[in-house]
Amino acid sequence: MRQLTGTTINVNSDILAKVTTNCSVIRNRSKYVLVKKGLKKKPFGFAAIITDSEEISHKATAVTLDAERLVDFHDGDVVLINPNGEIIFLYEKTSLHNAILATERCNHRCIMCPQPPIAQEKDKTDFNIELISLFDKSTKEVGITGGEPTLIGDNLFKVIKHIQKELPNAAISLLSNGVKFADKSFAMKLAQCRHRDLQIDIPLFSDIAEEHNAVVGAKTFYKTVQGLYNLALFRQKIGLRVVIHKKTYKRLPQFADYIYHNFPFVSQVAFIQMETTGLAKENIADLWIDPYDYNEELRQAVLLLADRGMNPYIYNAQLCVLPEDVRKYAMQSISDWKDIYLPECENCSLKGQCGGFFESNREHHSEHIKPIINDISHDI
Ligand code: SF4
Image (cartoon, rainbow, N blue to C red; front, side, top):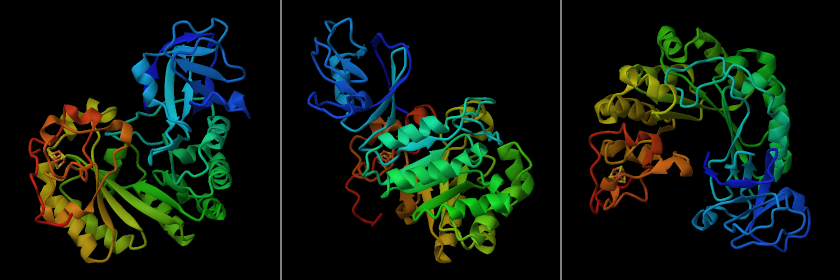
């Protein structure tokens, strides 16, 4: 999540509030943080003030920031301000990648996890319910992530139903390892939420149980497979996610064939370039392979699924590295706040269409990045 740090005045506990740049907001001011340049007086009723003015009244609850940072705030964003002066953007109105962090606990420990799990935490459900209520009503997509979201048990359904009520236009993407859905009654409860547009995105890393288990750090392959079948039984929309690295790339074609034969009901299969942060960074020597070097395996897997009428996608990839005949399957999948381009990309004619790089991949990226100049020869 995007984060800024300023200097606090009278911020003694966490403040969760919606951003406004409009002093004339009248109703529910206590739910808003006012972001304004040059404020001196304390406007009445706001949860807090964010300003560049050092002269702001010492009676205000405020954070002061450099003036050029104030343009980072947009009406409708939702921020969490803490006593250390950190301002964390929990929702950005213009982003398509907003997500609820259901829990930071997990029953897996994937060797390439970008956000390593923690062992214990205070339940986040009430906080998340309050957060969802602050989202803009026109929100089109919300992710539910973790950790492993199903570890919050039935509170997961409470969160889903609250999204359904507060954000009727929002599709939900639930990122889960699928293990908990091996329990048929739990899968049934998800179906009973009757959300009109919910997809469960489940990572699976191999057609061989031991290889999958070695990646996730638990003996759960068959539970995930059972979870997939239970979700299919209740006609849930399922996506599969395959993160590609040194431990998973070799069998991509065989794995694609296995997916076709065993999970023909999934609505999409996403092949994902690894984000090199968290545990992926710690284990980089065992995991890193230049994406260019697995192009052939990726190409075979993608085309095998596409030729058989399934929906393969490629996430987090750079178009200049991919073979031309699979570029059309690449999606702009990197969250806006993490997304960068390299100096080499400056004159590339595909820059607007290419997904770019994770900020964390500055150090580890393909050595085959090469701008494509006036590339009009193919339809991507
Ligand atoms: S040069 Fe940069 S923008 Fe162009 S295709 Fe490659 S990674 Fe994408």
